[in-house]
Length: 433
Ligand SMILES: Nc1ncnc2c1ncn2[C@@H]1O[C@H](COP(=O)(O)OP(=O)(O)OP(=O)(O)O)[C@@H](O)[C@H]1O
Image 1 (cartoon, rainbow, N blue to C red):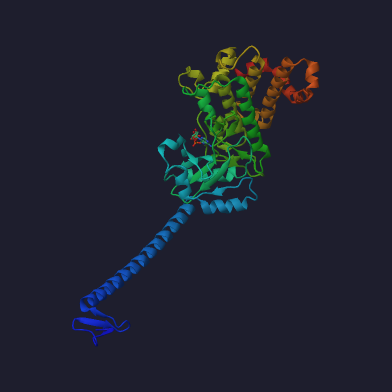
Image 2 (image 1 turned 90 degrees about the horizontal axis):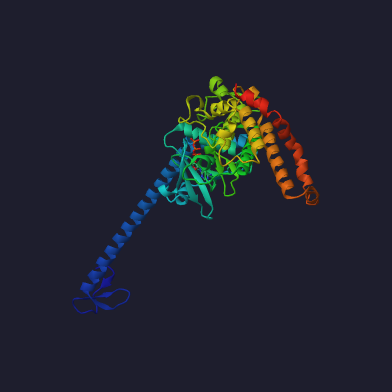
């Protein structure tokens, strides 16, 4: 018997070497078994723990490899390369984790879906700091969508403008890439103009301001952004409205950065039917005038409350541009202007805005004005309106005391509007060609 001796103990008892206390031999056997049992259990647990640790490590390694693979597959490497090559960016693009995105969308719960577009599904997300965001998830297994996502990150990282939806970050370590934007609460301009569920009947003041905001944003993208940008998919469904009905231009997936030394690019024709510039469609040559055409269509939608394409309209008026052209030719503009818009005080503005829309949608790009000119003309209309509102409200002497002179000074710009109003009749005839 190891660790014990029998001396001095009665038979059937043993004494422990160290304690010299006599104990029954049965209990000794019990302790021996306990020790064996404990030793085996602890050994087994240690082996189990080591096995779990190794498995976890392997899983972690596999996950990291998979995330790395997804990151590469989603163009992460290319993005980092191009972002660092593009010089300083205007926007901080945060990299979100897969876990963070799952938590924010409650595992992509169906009730969180805000909308579905050609590129994928947009979810409402709540970040740990309680801020609300919109998370766009690309369609699975479509590499062209992935390219558009990367393109959108690259383009939006160059823009910081109050009328462009802000890109907060992205997540590329998931099977399909995710983009995270600021949440814009009041839906799209398309819904406001055409949806039967939306009872919002936008007044002319709102519509004109929205038109000015979109035109100003496009003028900025074409001329003032660090690299000229062509949006390529301007339409009412891509204009979001916030709680103050401020326009936010969205969806830069199709947009193109134009190298400084190039005036136009040859690209695969892309855009939305009804808004697509016919010249670009025919030649594949893209330049800023394609956005001007699409903007003209949007302006016509704002004026008429009609969709860009509608198969319920007569044969020669299915497209909104021909709808306006035939109404102008037959001198019945008042018939096609939205009932929520026209009143006895704004007829000249409506005529002038119609003239601008018609100019924007001329068949060749050369005939169309530049976006900076369009923005100035519309801004001129708005300034005139504000000036008139002030002078109706306050007699000239009071207005002077209230500093309305400043607005009058802005009226210099509005003179563009006045001058062009003189041309309305001529242009009405031209539009009917
Ligand atoms: N930042 C955002 N905030 C709130 N809602 C958004 C935001 N971005 C998109 N949405 C909603 O998600 C919908 C789908 O957006 P998305 O840009 O993917 O599609 P689309 O513009 O309708 O289609 P396509 O990509 O084919 O042009 C929008 O119509 C809008 O309702």
